[in-house]
Image (cartoon, rainbow, N blue to C red; front, side, top):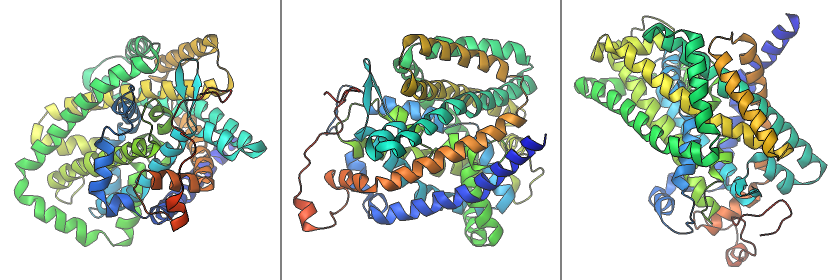
Length: 468
């Protein structure tokens, strides 16, 4: 018990204090280092993101849909309520600021992953492990890569599986009266049918499910907001008035990082925005685009959609419905209460259904992340099959497991993963800058660099031996 208490204290300090400071500091640095191109030149940035330039056979949008499956989660619904309860209406403003500063971190890690991606048989693989090993190189890079892959493998069972399944099972039981064992087994079987199809099988599901579920939830939010449209100016005024109080700033920055959790903590919210964590690049490398910066821009959109759109709409529904009086500090109950003003008793069913669908999408996405981390160590089909079977079994058990220990290990593993990843992204910042310049998104540091030509096409797949 003392060991667990000690680990929990480490997780609370590391995730609650150290990690937010690191994320925000790195975001500010990279925004300045890359000239803030996505803020100063949004039209030019958008044109490159949607252009066909450098496009290959693989769909960048399918890769984005898988990454969004891990990014969007129950926290987009519940975490915003936690932020507002913690810091008042002004917390929403600081969520926006935090999102804009963190976008560039996801851009940078995706660019590096595209630059150093490799092949595992016929399937492209990549992520922090590969730019740690091949970008940093040497013993240091190898150690960083091995530690990151091991922690990513562990997190796939905890944060990406048990935590999601437990939240979904609670929602299914409390709202639809489905027993947790039955829900766990049924969901595990459906999960198996999807994840054994590899990235293609997962992307086929997410490319349909994510747009449909997101559109449904957005419709519910927009309709609710329009019903109280006359109160929107008052809500915006309250957000701006309270934005610069100490409690609002603290609650908002934490709330942005909390936005992927049922409780609190950056680690519990990492599956929501994932900026800096290093997981999203594992999905993005499946795009065949030959311009790393182009795929990186989809990472910026990922954070924008997750926080600026999804979380903002959730926040407005809560503020309009509650009118500054929060009946509970429980995020899920507060959201249900807010939506019940507009949808009556149906609100519990609508919110629970959204949680079930978002949680399932996250589970199948993290199966791919875990498989990618395993492939860094062992590239055999047998090892992959054993992992996927264990993952499905964990899904079934996760529906009724207690989460105390799971949360503790998730906190620590995600914190270490993020710190390792951001350290390496900073180490390789010049390569991120070069790719950004090459795409014409920011000006070179000097005329000499402006005349420099790229001598190697990094976006072309390489196998482990280095052959094209």
